[in-house]
Length: 242
Image 1 (spheres, rainbow, N blue to C red):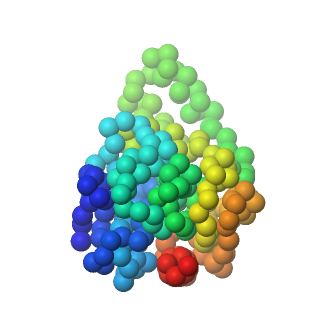
Image 2 (cartoon, rainbow, N blue to C red):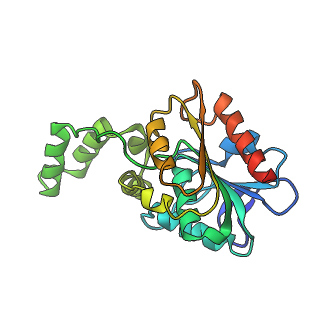
């Protein structure tokens, strides 16, 4: 059932009949629907982050800290909850736990690009030249957009307007400073073959969290499906019993 988070205009799918004990935050280009099987039988909310699913886009180019701050306002008065974050949603969840620790009793993170462990991909020369020419107004916006769509990632090509600005801003973020400030217990559930958020990044972040464990799911990749979905559900259930 679609509802709101507290008295805010944030929208979420509601599970159970009691006050939410779990809040789930989805990945980029996804929606709260990703958590239907994970949250079934729980008192929980699967949030549709602004700009995804049925939720309206932010009015400006939010950072993940902006998402977290706005979510904190929506959660005020709800008490501490378990926050589950996948990929982009995990970035927001981590910011929330670091900036508003009183709202987060435990974190379950999966497939979150917490830090870079490989050099960034080199930008093709043609794209770099096009950006220079566009900045000097020597090629029109329509031509520049063709270059963006040719050389950008799938997420970048699919994003429009403010959501593309948010994506560009988010990709450049690093989270290790916030990792050190998370006081809630953290369970990281990672696909062995996750490419967008390599296991090596999770292993590196594990050294910085004050209280964290890492479970590796053999053969799993990035999306919440199969054995990874089951492992995340198990982690949520375990967090609820602690």
